[in-house]
Length: 114
Length: 115
Image 1 (cartoon, rainbow over the protein chains, first blue to last red):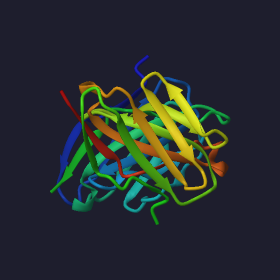
Image 2 (image 1 turned 180 degrees about the vertical axis):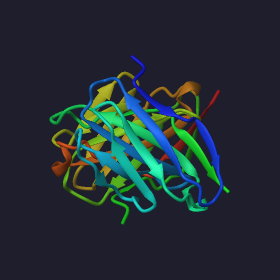
Image 3 (image 1 turned 60 degrees about the horizontal axis):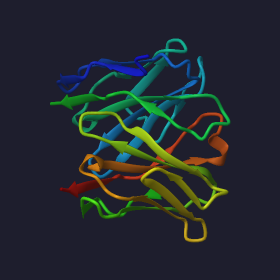
Image 4 (image 1 turned 90 degrees about the vertical axis):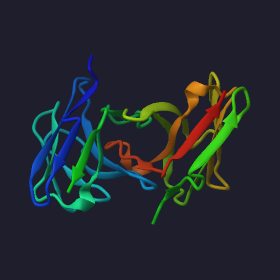
């Protein structure tokens, strides 16, 4: 099992450009999440999907959109990138309700917006 | 409003000694607390968790203590090893989030274990 995979690993964008970050999991998890990690800020939730077909905003959704393509895949789109979106982005997934809430993370995408 | 706080950005300890990482929370409506460990250029990995109905959980060298009256969580690593050097995040799950698995993370504490 690959667990949670993310592409690309690293990306440089110019202000105003768009891009999509891809995430896939092979653990048959219902829930998937997108976080950003910034120095001193911890992991902040951007969007999440509790199950296939549903998405909800997290703590910092502005400037982002998401698509839960199927149970395995959850993508994050930046329509018009801004320097404030320079960050490391992590995708995560977790299993069914009733568990302790353990999430499994991908390796991250490092994004630089110039 | 930061509901989960790690007030120490960094901690340095000698190999073989105890490492104590602290976390405070402001919301009493959490049912699970978790610790994650993160190495550079990798994603966070789950380390240990504790239910809100317990006050201690132990797994090998790692023990998590929960003091509900003080709204305080701590992770003890004994003995500390150089391979434990990483960023440690505490996280909490709200009672209403059992069906979504949403977590709220602290800012992280960078632990350095010196040989």
